[in-house]
Figure 1 (cartoon, helix red, strand yellow):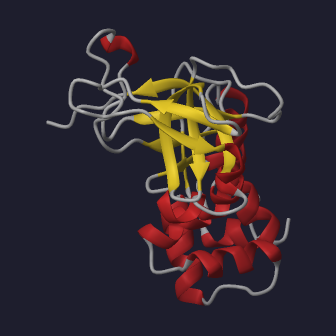
Figure 2: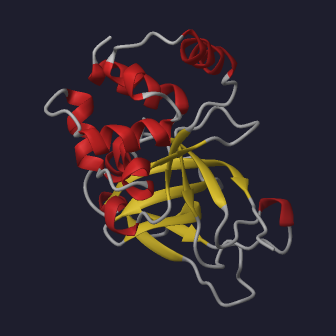
Length: 224
């Protein structure tokens, strides 16, 4: 295989994105994307840094070696990845608050990829912020600031499941709310779980919602 094909294969199987490489190394996201498309090839220093980061040899990356150890490792990962990594966005305000919504911001090259064990049927995850969805009545359905929220994109907009919790991409960014019927025509009403702290319902015109996604699970991590 040539360099661009090998690099793409390694990144796919190791569930590493150009975005992540750009954050963790001195090789930029755009450079990695150019390497993967064949628009350019890395310098010697960049090639060495990529190989070290990906835990492979430079010879393997450029196609001068068909290391059985590397190939076997890749094959094992490919067969045993029961919970594949999915796109994850830490801060979606700027990315999701425009036409294209979640679909635009969760491209593999634009965000991190993480795996949520025991959750398969979701499309992407986002990091929640704020305290409006703390549920003191049913703590098992709380969403706290910093929680990882698994979402499944809604493909059909003809039927809204009122009473369900949605992640919505709106003109003002993204919001996670329980969606109920509104008394205002052409709108939905968004409710918070945390009414005790003064989070009141509000209405959003449906034509100001760029994307809808069901919330299907929440992962909480307590940092000590």
